Length: 254
Image (cartoon, rainbow, N blue to C red; front, side, top):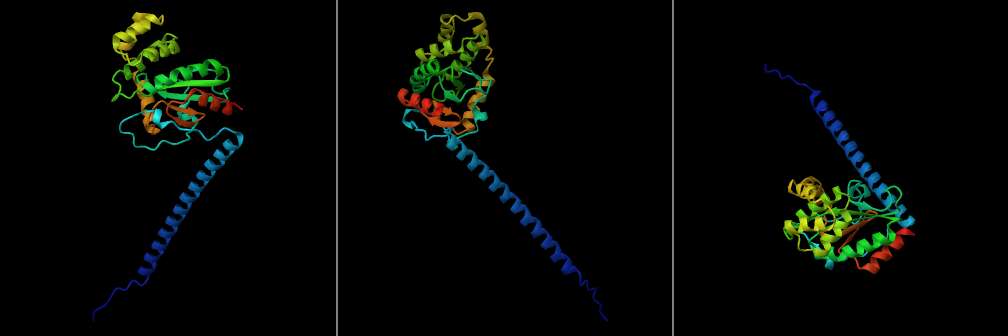
C-alpha cells in the first residue's frame, strides 16, 4: 500500500509567514508615509512662520537678464536652507552672520555681462546697507561660455588672500570681459597687491578647489546661470534693477 507523508501544518505555516511579511511591509510603509507627513508638515509650518514674520516675500525673477549655463536640467528651488549657500568661508561684507537680519548671496561670473551690470548695484547697496545687511559673493564661472571666467575667479581669491578681494572684484568687473592672464596680473598691480605673491598664487591655482566647490553647489541647486541671488535663502534669478533691489532690501529689513 502506498503511504503519503502528509504535513497538514505546512500550509498553515506558509500562510503565517506570508501574513507576517505583509504586516511588516504594511508597518514599514506606514512608517515611511508618517515620516513624509511629518517632514512636509514641518516644512509647511516653517515657511508659514517665515511668511508671518515677513522673512519670505514674493520675489520677482529676471530670467531675461541672465547668462544661461549650458546643460542645466535640475529645477532650481525657490527657497533653500540658508546654511547651504551662506558659507562662512566666502568673501563677505557686513555684520556677522548671526547678527544680520538679511544676508544676500550672489553667484556670479566675472565675464558675464549681466553680472557686470549688477556689480555696481551690488556694491552700491553694500556701501549703503553694509551695517545691517551681510553681502556674500560666490563663484559660478560658466567656462563653456566664458573661457577666462574660472581664471578670473582664481585671481579674485588670490587678491582675497592679500585682503583686497572687493577692490579686485571691482577692477575685474570694470574691465570685463578683458581677463586674460596678463590682464589679471596688471590689475593686481593697479589694485596695490604684491605682484610676486599674487602671480605665484594664480599660477599654482591655489584656490581651484574652492572655486570648483562653489560651481558644484550652483549645479546641485539647479541654478540656470548668472547672476543668481539668494536673499535669506530665497532665490532671485537674473540681474535685479537697482530700484527693485533696494526695495526688496528695505522690505526684508522691516
